[in-house]
Length: 372
Image (cartoon, rainbow, N blue to C red):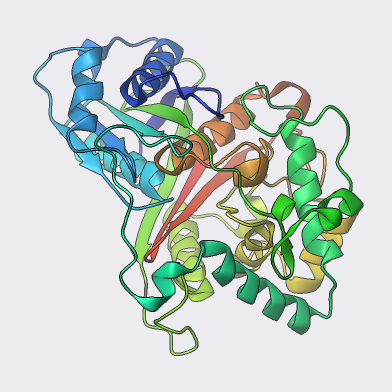
């Protein structure tokens, strides 16, 4: 137990915000989180911001739009894990006693680069390949080892699209149910992954208020753990865009130990799914299912909000959308919403403990465990 609480969450709609400045997106999410917590910006002792592509000084500009209170503002960057990295810092600011309340804000525009924004240049050979190449290789290996066909991955993706239909903030909200055949029929990106198995790059922002004292509707932070790419002889150093599955195992096991829980205690999960196959491999690596079990869950509806292992109930990166710096905080916000019992049509039945997990390019991983 960390002894701190997530008191307020805010998430903008994920999609194209071509005419909305990036700073405005961040400010909007932050104000939503503050209003949700019942606190004012003057109650906040520290701010931590997250983005992968924003230009220099964006974080401080977002904070100054909220108020000029003289508090510390720290910008973080860790690719897709950035949002949860910022949340971990906000939690640490409160658990350390430095602040009674802290604010984490993530924001990103991926559909139209902001003036001054940063796009990493390709340097090495593997930098010239899209991330989907890595996930395709990993997916093909899992299908071979598990003796499954691509319809299992397609079932995970279809579930995510159908969960997004219940989330008004998601970018991919189809008018009717999405089927496994729909996913398999989409354009091939990198075999066995079709376009519908890959994430949607979007613009968006999310924010969370962390407090020492519980607030109305707050949830408790049981644990938050962060790791970098560990030594693993089975995982090549060149080619993969993220760390090995053993890193997910390491991070999750540290979180379980710190929280004093077992994987079977977790009632709702929000994890990084840059491709639908990553949802499968992450669940296995973190001890939440084995290969045979996750294949069955995927094909029988067990990963949906009304299934036995509800995962990415808001649509995940596949269908909610992936706004790099905001994604981790949006994931944690979904877990908070579920634990509060406020998720509406996608509500999980009385979850007590939830997990938010993110991985970032280059080898960052964060796992947060929350309790209602």
